[in-house]
Length: 205
Length: 132
Image 1 (spheres, chains in turn yellow, purple):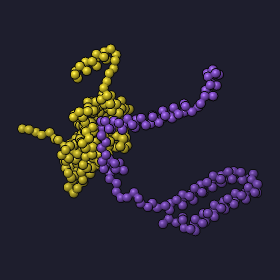
Image 2 (image 1 turned 30 degrees about the vertical axis):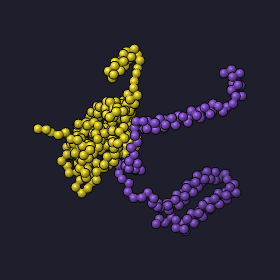
Image 3 (image 1 turned 180 degrees about the vertical axis):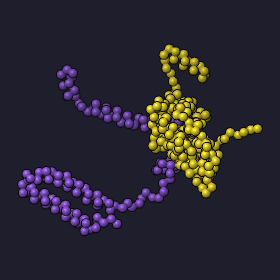
Image 4 (image 1 turned 120 degrees about the vertical axis):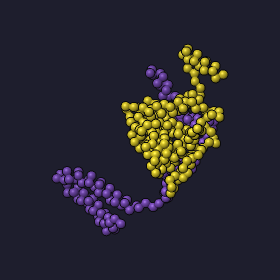
């Protein structure tokens, strides 16, 4: 059925007739208007700023409108070292964004703590608290890497289904939109991870 | 436009096009809102939450109460400044036209100045100009 439809679509496009589905149209609109949050944490933010400027021109991907309020943003780029003191604020900002929302963890620090991993006050990766969609390695990643992450995110958005069991979190009524904000306690963050979000790869020997 | 149609337009009832435009304007505003509501009902469920609905949105939690008293004593400074600011606007043309003015005009201006100086003396004696 699906294959037949795809064949019909290619056949029609050969004759100059463009067909689409509601889902594709919806995702096409969404992926070309991702508005990131104006939110820079460390040196990666400088690369993020460079990405938006004329030379690298993120506007080509419809993502130049950096919003100053989480209420108007779809994407949070965690660009830099997340200290344990900052982590609750990052999670709270993510919680305040409307659905559908996406996260790019930019750079080694946002992924794992990077060179500051052994610091007493550095969070070892923001994916311990919020679901990260795209990770970019690098210290800091070049603007091209951020653009690549954007394009990866766009592909991810384009593949999301509107209906069915595989539909993304924001379309499931029972799945959460807010994630628990860790407390900055006496001995660091409590809890240390959000077990529902953090799924590290297990090494099986 | 030929004269026949333009005179027909003048004599025709002007309200139907205005009503049509009004309905169009209302639909232009309301239709997207209704579509969004329909979309939320069909596909995307609303997920309000405590933090999502919080008033403050910079990531920090708001502390204290918004219903506090603000010190209002500055408003008197502001009003006095405003009065003398306006006086300066009048003083400049007064000074420029001074040699050509009649005695009556001069007296009128001096009365105006006197009134303002009197106000300043009043404010000073009332203790407005001492910051506490």
